[in-house]
Amino acid sequence: MQAQGPLRVGVRRARADDKDAVLAFASTTWDGWDYIPEAWDEWLAATDGTLLVAETMTPDRDAEGGVVERGRVVALARVTMLAPAEAWLEGIRVDAALRGRDIGTNLQVAELAWAAAQGATVVRYTTGRDNEGSHRLGARHDFVRLADRRAYGPNQPSESPSGRPIRRPFGCSSPTRQRRSATGGPDWRTTRSSAPATASTNAAAWPSRS
Image (cartoon, rainbow, N blue to C red; front, top):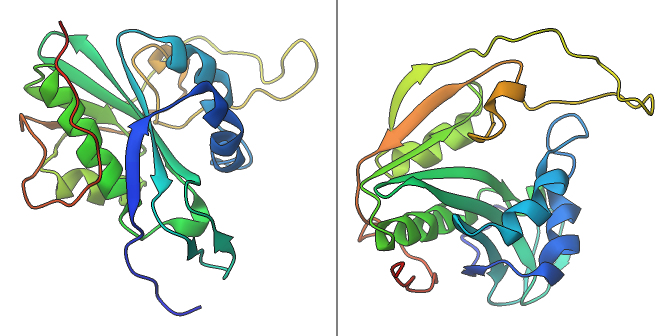
């Protein structure tokens, strides 16, 4: 297929009826596994942050030539406030058939705008050390790499009581999941208090917390 340009998307808060569309592209990220199916209900109900999705604004085609309908949910991200001035980003996912079309960029602009509206002056996230796409996305929005990390803990079973293998993330762990992660990646931080003025996005203007 010929190279495609940016895909116009709008960013909004996730709804319960987005679940099937999200899990269609966020269930097999790492060797057939992802923690998003386990986290979805908890994140949707959480009051310490917001769960965002990006949906297409116009019909288009994906990398395989398939039709992408207007209003299709194609990306996900969560941002939460760890402290009054500190935000944490996690769980960013983009439909594999639509990557490289600035969807992740627009989604992160929306995350940073929401965090700034809540009063965040520091924003952090953790990602896999080999996740170059995530590194580029962070650098694009003035994140600075802080350090590599590795988690240690007791040996854990490789199978659940049902006999199914237990799969764990490699580095893309949230604050509540870090102790379950076998290995860690780099920590990133930005001290920008607002989204870059030059970035284009269709994100809503997020209200401050009362």
